[in-house]
Image (cartoon, rainbow, N blue to C red; front, side):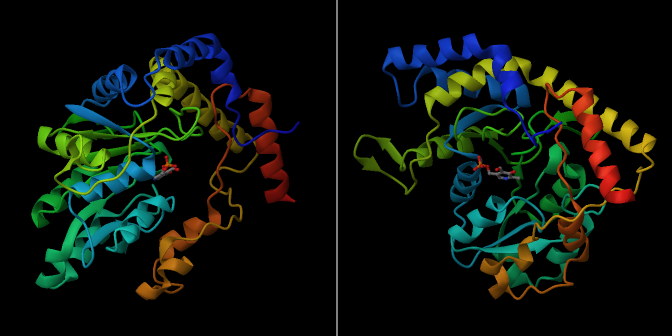
Length: 346
Ligand SMILES: Cc1ncc(COP(=O)(O)O)c(C=O)c1O
């Protein structure tokens, strides 16, 4: 049996008619830029994440870029981030001619290690510390970074936090005894609606969540070239608008998201059981080339070399993404585990 890493069809089939109707309505409305679908989705995502507001944007990458632009990050500034993530997290920093400062990850969660973050900031002299304009923790593989600790450090050094939530919509984290969702824990929450994400559109899309009306206003302003009204530009921005067709599709999918999460969690439990039954518990290791940031060619000028970040280098060599999508059958999962067992035990 061939098992794809991801199959987008099962959730699509579940909602096909509703999705086609919603897309048709946008087409027939002739409102192709902004409009009610964007407003509606922004309200619904803010409510889902437990934030005051949300601002739809063109992609997860642009969600990060726009948040940095709202903080006026530019040449000479530092942005501290995890050394192990999808390229966009560090790419957006470099694109603004600021310098990413990579921080080692926790070996258990693969998320930024708060101890290392604190150490990096403590070891900077005052001049460099004043250049640190943002911290971007990444909630990798659907698991929140240790936001309680990260927020403490951010407060101590007075640096804003941009959560990279592209892989973690709906993930929960306990801060001060209260369970909160990803995107409501820092100053900005950046989400991706890339089709393969847990809440994916039928093209690119993203959203930024915020708990501060001034930040929301600036996000909205910079989303449209900084244009407050026609032909008047107070600040520089870009075209970071979300497409209403994507918003319409995502609005249809959103009420099903928690159910799909439960299916993924069920699949994860099945894997744990099947790995244990196959004698692979705690042993599964497969080679996969995914470089950590400090060894990417475009960041070599920052002086990184092999051995500088051992935890992320090891993670990059050993991490294997398993298919876990909703709609996967137990037989498919058994096939995956059999293949891994064959590779590992033979
Ligand atoms: C951790 C992380 N950050 C940022 C992004 C960028 O999102 P997008 O592909 O929507 O630009 C992604 C996804 O691709 C991601 O996984």
